[in-house]
Image (cartoon, rainbow over all chains, first blue to last red; front, top):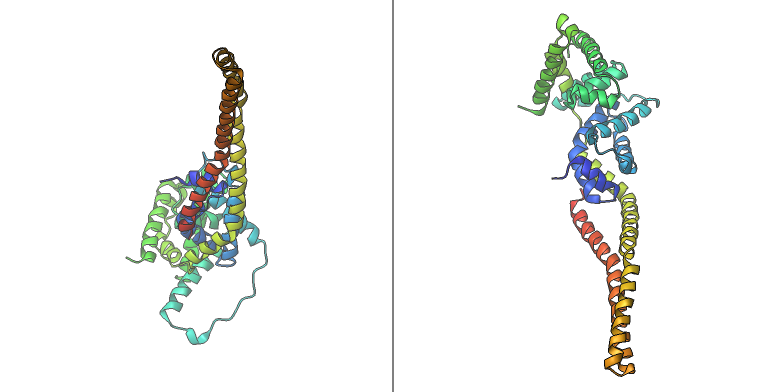
Length: 171
Length: 155
């Protein structure tokens, strides 16, 4: 089976099967990363733009690097740019749909989203990559382009803050 | 065990792993289970397959452009490589034909020797032309087959 890095080489030659395979392998992790990073806003556009950039720069990809790290870096840069845009106006929730299990689950998710939103951007990135994507501290450091010690320290501060917030909100 | 529980369990393990290596976390024990449960509740309600289909459709023209660029570049390289030994082959052929004509004209009438040499040279030229014409055809066939497997692989 071809590695991700080989597939990027084939993608640069315009092979659609390489794109299909890369999408299949990374669609779930990339979309959930973007969703949690942005709180669910404009995920479709960001997801598409990430792949557009992957295709555009596939020729320049250094195959000695890990593709997933590169992919997260592209997505993270896009999400950071996106973060500078103003947020949309908040909508009121439908009172009639209250007390359904789906709503309860959605609210729990919303609480988690609120928790993450209260973290500084740098700490949020570390938590999302480490907690949801099972990346090692080395990989997170490579994606964020910072030393491993910084990742450890950010994770510690994020956990302390989350612990404090979770206790306060009793989520 | 549902996805949320599984995510919470694995997430908690990762957080605990960090705590073991982090002196600061070890000094101030944190509610990893609560944090993991809270974070695991953050589900992603996206139709990922549809997202990928949309991306594949959006990128198709660019992929076709890249494939075309790659084809012509490859064709140029292959033809260049194939043309490199051609002058040497033609020189060798001309020499062999000269030697053959010199020998044939001593044992055959000159007109017959000339006819033999010219028909041999003509068939050689035809063979060369066919060989070089086959290069783009073979490359196009390769690209066409790749295109067929691609169409099946697309999401």
